[in-house]
Image (tube, rainbow, N blue to C red; front, side):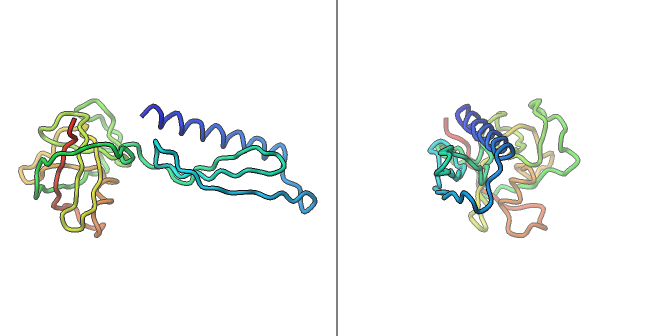
Length: 180
């Protein structure tokens, strides 16, 4: 996790540096045409796609971040064990966005968070839609849902990645818990 943060910070710093260099030294029009080579690089630790542009005259590499993926989703080394099948999942209402959860973490509807009645806080759970096979990995940060029918409450971002019909409010899922 710390490596991912460091890589992200380094890319942000290099972008800020390149913008500063670009603003102080704008490119010349048609006089000094420079060839720019582009190559695509994907670091092993992250799923961020980077394009490195090298200017043949200045030879200063400039990195541009094309896609930033949430950290929970990028952890590919997790192993899961089966927990429950045919579980009913729903998503948090917008009114809970920014409120404190039972674990003390502020709830964010744009992150991969979930609420479960019994699983410990911080547990990573792979939630798979049984109808279409889509899955997402979420972290348990709250207690609930307070309904006998529902098994898990997902953040809106996680829920919308699972379903095909964005107008639905519930879905049947399979739950798998991180095997430590």
